[in-house]
Amino acid sequence: MSAINNVMKNNFRNLELDEFLSETLRDAGYGRVDVQKTPIGTRITLSVTRPGLVIGRKGTGIKDLTSKLEQKFGLSNPQISVVELEAPELNPKIMCNRIAQLIERGTAFRRAAIWTNNTIMNAGALGVEITVAGKLRSERAHFEKHAAGLVPKSGDVANKVVRYGVTHVLTKMGLMGIQLKIALKNEMPREFEMIDSETSEKTIENQKMETGVQVGAEENKTTEGIESAQVEGKNDGKN
Image (cartoon, rainbow, N blue to C red; front, side, top):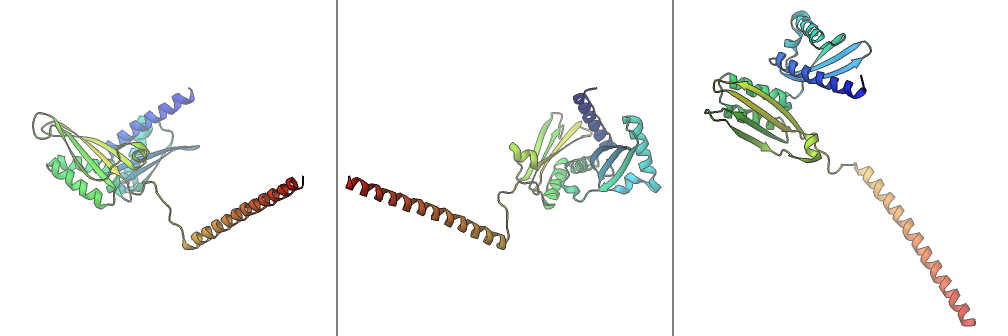
């Protein structure tokens, strides 16, 4: 198998693994998964909001999950570690699942979207955009968009700052899709860099010294040019 086919196969397997874990660990607040190959097996790091539900009583939950991953995806000696997310409000997958759970419990989609909007902005996000599409209130499908703050749409800034999340929920009216975009303030590229006062003073002194050296060199060149011109003039007068 070539290197390109091997990379494509691993990426496709990781996508299937992410989809499987998002459905299996939905109640535990699944955020993301990190898969790394090691000489002794496969290391899998799960980021969730409720690690206790994943580990289970006396580790039974994580043992069952390990056997399922080994059988379904053919992972060699999977070693699972569970990490708790520090800021779940800034994870689009988690917030998408929360909106879906609220809608499944009977909460109006507009109320759930506005509540999620306010929660994400209060957590310190740069901006948020929630799109709910499907059969919302009638047999005819349409969509509604709720946004707050600043969400870059294109360019390199959007690729670095914006995080996406998509989920679906089945209601009595039909299938409803939820798309969530969160712009992270910490990922914004810096336009300037703050430096200490001592560093700034040293930088200014170095710039002054360099400027003085350049000015002195230019003055020397000018003086030499004037002297050479005067000598040439005297020689021409004698001739």
